[in-house]
Each structure stands twice: as C-alpha cells, then as structure tokens.
Length: 386
Ligand SMILES: *Cc1c(COP(=O)(O)O)cnc(C)c1O
Figure 1 (tube, rainbow, N blue to C red):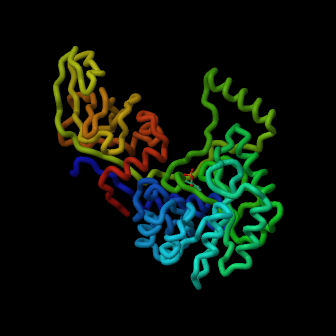
Figure 2 (cartoon, rainbow, N blue to C red):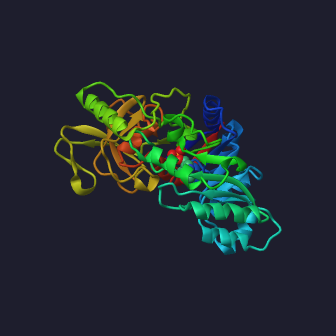
Figure 3 (cartoon, rainbow, N blue to C red):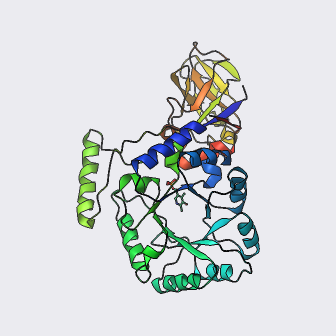
C-alpha cells in the first residue's frame, strides 16, 4: 500500500446525484459546482456526476475549465469569475458560459471581436458583496445590451451568503434579488438560479428559480439542518431560534431531510512503526503530550502535508473498526496514535470514511467541511473505483 491513499467512489457520486434529482425533480437544470478541483475529488469525477443527472457545471478558473474539458468535451460549463479580456479566446475555445459580474466586465466581453456567440449568465449581488450587479437600472441596461448583441442571455443568478437557518439574510437576499430584477422580465431568461446545497435542503423551492446549484451535497454530505437533540442547552437554542423566527418573520426551515447520500471520498494510510512509550515520557513536537501510562503508539506517515491540518482537537482514527486518539502535535509528515496491543504494523488506518465522518474529521482539525475535502484531495494520491 502507498503511505496514504485517497479513494474516490465514482458510483457513489452518480447515485448521490440521482437521489438529489429524484428528491427535487422540479428543476430544469442541475448545476454541479466543481471548483476546488471538484471539492478535492479531482476532475475525473465529473463524468460520474454527469451520469447521475448533473447537466450543467460551474468552475472558478480557466485552468479548472481546461481540466474539465479533458473529461467532458460538450457539457455546458459556467465560469463563475470575470474572464480577463486577453483570455476571452481561451474561454471561447473551451465553450464556456460566462458569468457577467459587472458593467465593466460586460463591456469587455461585448467588445471582444469574434463571430462566436457566448452564453451569458448575469450575476446579481443580493447581499454577498463579492461579485455581481447591485443596481436595478444597471441590470436592466445590461439585459438590453446583451439582447442587442450577438451573445445570448441564458441565465441569471445570485449566491447566498447564509443558509437562512434562523438568520434573516436568506429571506433578505431573495427579496433583494426580486427587487434588483424588477425592471426586467425574468420569464424571458431560460435559467434562473439561486441556491446552494444547504438552501436546497433547508427551504421550500424559491418560486422564481427553475435551476438549482449545488456542491457538497453531490459528494455525499447531507448538510441540511437537523432537529435539536435533547437536553437543556438544545431547549434554550430552540426557544432562541423561535424567538428570532417570529421577530424577523422568517420563512420556514425544513429539518431532518431524508436523502440517500453516501460520501464518495475515503482516506487511508499505513502504519510506519509501533513505538513503546513509558509513563511520563513526552511525545512529539513541543513535548505537548505526556504519556500518562505505559503505552503503544502507532506512528502514521501523514501530517499537514497530507491535508489533515496541523491542529489536533481530539482527532481519532479507525483501525480494525476501533477508534484510537491521535496524540501530540501533528507534524508535516507524521503523527502518532495511541493504540493497544491488538494493532499490528500491517493494519490499515482509516483517517476519513467508515466510522470517521467528515464532520468528525474537520472539527478535530478546525477545518470547514469543504476545506477538509479540498485539502485531502489536493495533497494525496487519488484512486478511482467504480
Ligand atoms: C461553491 C458554490 C456553490 C455550492 O455551494 P455548496 O454549499 O457546496 O452547495 C454554489 N454556487 C456558487 C456560486 C458557488 O461558488
């Protein structure tokens, strides 16, 4: 076995998408966001996503678009960032749909000399304050300019800053989007897309949207809100949330959505050495861990160079279906796990997958969910299975 190995299950990707499309059949198009090298799964994975029902993709760089085109040559791809004027020819060769984020960018695209007709999606800034138009007169002007050009206004969209689970920003952004597009006729634009995976799960369908966009969900993670557990803390949370829901007049939040998703990525490594340590000895950098008793450590060939992060907030790994704690600081290429004498040097160690959920993995490294996937994928050899 290689020191460490990330496995991507392509069949699971297809099945996840199939389950999503079956559960939410009311959309014309399903845009799969494959930025961050397909959330760390590698562009090879897009074929499986496409097979499951993703019929439109979104990338965040021309380099990603190139890697995408090597796998799927004709499926439509939306490039989410404003393309530079001297790279419009590349975008054309890659047959990309362009996201138009402001008037200056639109003028750049319209002044590009070509016979080619780009599909364009207008990006609206309904409160995110990164990219996008935020003036309704300018939006009207942009629509008119595109109409009288050789290019096609195929879509209009915005991106949510929050999931709207007991915060007013979600509803505010929808209202703002409607206000910003009030001078144009949305029904003339084939694709209207507001949303991300979590907003798809947590809310009723947005009336004006006919296309949805998603990332994390496709890779197998149900990121929808869950019901409150037991205990006094959860009771207090529930009361607080209900108070704000009333105060702000928030739209309904849907919880505990049942959908068959299974994570496509798993991450394993071998054991380098089994080390006997005596009570009172220190382990690892900065001697931050002191053995409280005689113990055996499994030394693993993975560290922050392999995408697991440097921080260790109660990280565990799985060996032979048992969980063991990572002790001491995580180095660049190694870390130590406190094991017992049932563990053999030939045993396989699971860092992510089986009993180790992405939630556990990322919490124990203080990483976001997508951040953890991206850093694992980027920093390890990946193998694909069907
Ligand atoms: C990343 C991204 C998404 C997907 O978000 P998830 O939370 O992973 O579902 C959707 N739309 C845009 C514009 C994005 O950049």
